Image (spheres, rainbow, N blue to C red):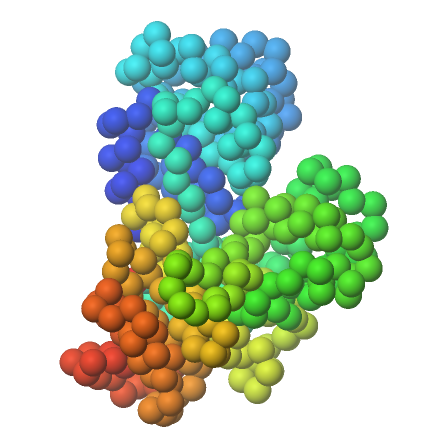
Length: 383
């Protein structure tokens, strides 16, 4: 079963304008499948293979000349010295094509900015969006979707979430942490991970978390950078400008995938999730992450923010388009309440006609897309 990815067309188009196309994203998000599907005529080589990696290190020019049409280099960050050779080759012959992938955004971008700036189009592939797999989710409840997550392995191998995410943490995340930071006490790092999951959708304070884990603020910041570089979490910044309001300036933390978040919260079934105190936060995470995936799948950077001021006026999600806003409130309830729109109304009073759309996204079936505040089921959002 091959599920088409929304990002495929924009990646293929970019190859017409850039000699290098780079795809980053979390491990197991489908990068290899995607680039091999899009660039079927190119030679494929993976630097996860130690023999192939040795070849690239010992004879970089011979390695890069494997195919005159184009070369796919999977997990390219393992041999960063290749980037300088690629720079020389594409400068001499812009018709040469290289497709790079990496699950380590930190290592890849550090080296690319030195060698391939202006020569590579860069895309970020996250796990499936709801749109990409909606046909496979028709018979699933929202709690099943949140609990299982949207990593491709859930659909390709039908592995259980518990097995997938426990091995994901042990096999991939711990390795990234050790490679980048040389963390010796993994117990503290696991505590940090679980405490992050407990803060989904909340204002993130590094000092508070440092005190709970028992490490320095600098250590927390370093660990956060690894989680972001490994595409485990992302931070949603607050929107603020020079208006007569005291605005919150802490970001909110979300996980790229809700299945991993549920695993870290010790949620062991979708039935348990139904009554868990974190359910509303996890649903919010799901919606926000899908808006982010939509941006990335169009080859665009994030335009996502939230709003909160000292009077406790709050909007869960803002989509900033130029000077205009789409304001979105997210509720996990199946029942609509008029109070859901209070934050949206207060936000519009402050920003006026810059607010071009107000929406409430929830789990209920009743919808109203013609009202001043649109009411939408999560399945029908135009991400």
